[in-house]
Structure formats: structure tokens, C-alpha cells
Amino acid sequence: MTTEETTSVTSTQTSRSGAPLGWAAGLTLTAAAATLAYASAVERTLYEVREETLPILPPGSAPLRVLHLSDIHMVPGQKSKTDWLHSLASLKPDLVVNTGDNLSHGKAVGPLLEALEPLLKVPGVFVPGSNDYYAPLLKNPLRYFAGPSIAPKESAPRDLPWADMFSAFGAAGWVDLTNRSQSIGFGNLRIDFTGVDDPHLGRDRYVPYPSGSSTSAQAPHLRVAVAHAPYQRVLDYFTADGAELILAGHTHGGQVCLPGYGALISNCDLPTWRARGLTQWESDGRSVPLNVSAGIGTSRFAPIRFACRPEAVLLNLTSRGGN
Image (tube, rainbow, N blue to C red; front, side, top):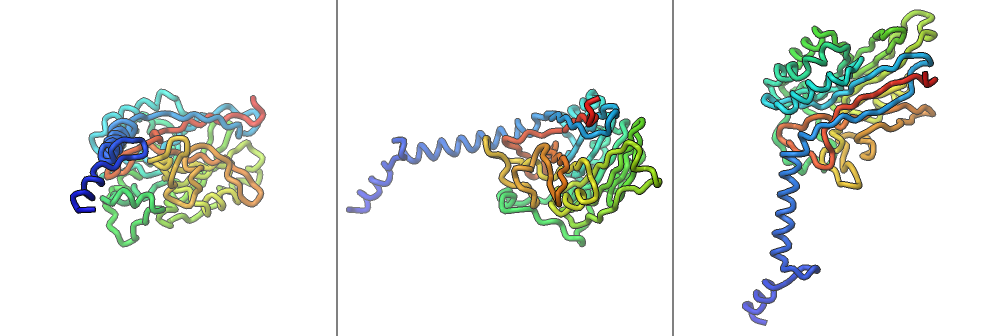
């Protein structure tokens, strides 16, 4: 067969569907481009509130509404995100829990505080994530699917104004749970909190729940544990010390998911099927509700979400007795 004949045969090859391969490839590229455009321009701003009900409060306790925020990744100029965060005050939460990665830009603290202004009037607690300390870097987006991202080295410059953010949160009355524990009263209920610095950076140092008085265990109370990244070692030591609810973020719910399948990666050692939602974490014979938020934002260098809408989570905590 001559070269010209070979070329002629190749140019008329078809796909299994009968369409010319070039045409099929063009359709594939068009579909991919449309999907990327949707993920970048549409879905990443389709904010939603996921509601869950958990009967975990001591019998006779009044219901408690807990708003779980995570992975805001604020960048100046994000009006739709700001407006939506403002609107969350209408949910009338009793408590806000912020599980970190609030920033994605060196000048984002002001816009972040503006967006959270109505919620900063509500009692709250917080822990940081790596993107509260370090600005994101431009990377090959395909590396995200190769496994958990590499934590910044301790010698890297702390080029995000995390101290200003911590100070502003503290001035508003939000409690810093960075490797700390503290109790907060809500009527006749006491919530004992413990939290850690970001496990993704290896900074977690567990601090036991406040011991209180010799009779504190007899008073109505709930033990809540808070972390940014839900690494299994962290979930295990929370569970071992009697946590009754664990809250975390970091995973972005997988960020780019397959419809009907779910997350491809959790960006930590958490199984991908737990990358978003409310599940039960089991360790050493104990089972604890674990809520992992899919988060609100993305890195400013990877502004896409697909089959994984951004979310805040409203946890309606009710009495174990149903009253």
C-alpha cells in the first residue's frame, strides 16, 4: 500500500458509532470545554445549605442550631459569596463552628470579615487550616488527583495575615480552639469543645476536654471536637476521649466528582465516600457522628466545582429523649 493510500485510509477511519474520529474528538473536546465552563462559571457559585438533624443532646435539652462553615477561601471581589454568607444569618444559628481555610489571598481578611459580619454576632468557635497560614500556589490541577496535596514546609513564608484574622474573630467573641479546649454555656447545657491546629500541616496537638468541677460530668453537657482536616488519626483520638460530635472540612467534598459515584479524592487519608456529609466514625468500639463539610470556596487557582456544590451545614441538635 502506498503512503498516499495509507493516508487516505487513516483519514476516513470512524469511531464505533460510525462518526468520523475527528468529528467525535471534536465533540469530546466541546463537551469537556462546556463541562469546564459550567464547573468554573456556574456550579462553584451554586451555594446551598445542607440541613441535618442529630438527636444527641442530653434528655430535656432545648434544640440547638449549629452552623458549620468551612473552606471559604475568600478572595477580594467575591460579591456573590459575600451576599450568600450574609444571608446565612437568616437561619438564626445559636452557634457558628468555623473549620478553617478562610483565606485565599493576602488582602482577603477585610472582605472575609465583611462577609461574616452578621454571623460574628453569634457565639462561635474556630480552628485554622493551611490556607489561613499560607497562600495557595499555582499548580498543575491534575496533581490534585494524584493524592493528598503536599503540606507547605514550616520554613515557607507565612504570607497570609492569619494573626489579623484570629484577632478579629477573638474580638467578636469567637473562641480559638487551636490546640485548645474550652467550655461554653447555652442555657442549662454546657458544650465542651476541643480543637486542633491543622492536621494537614502536622500541627495537631490534642488537648483533653476541660475537666471542670468534680461534679461537672453530672451536669447536662455535650462533647464536640473540631479540626480542619479529618485525618484518621485525629478522628481516632477525638473518639477515644469521648467526643459526641466531630466537625471538619478540608476535603471540598472531592471538589470534582463523578455523578452517581462521588468524590475521587479526599485530599487526606479519609475514605472518599466520607468526603462530604454526615457519617458515623467508628473507633475502638465507639461510634461518633462525623460531619465533613464540602466547603464554600476553592483555591483561587482552581476555581471549579463539578457535581459537588459549595455548602454550609445547619446541624439541628435535639434531645436524645425527643423532647
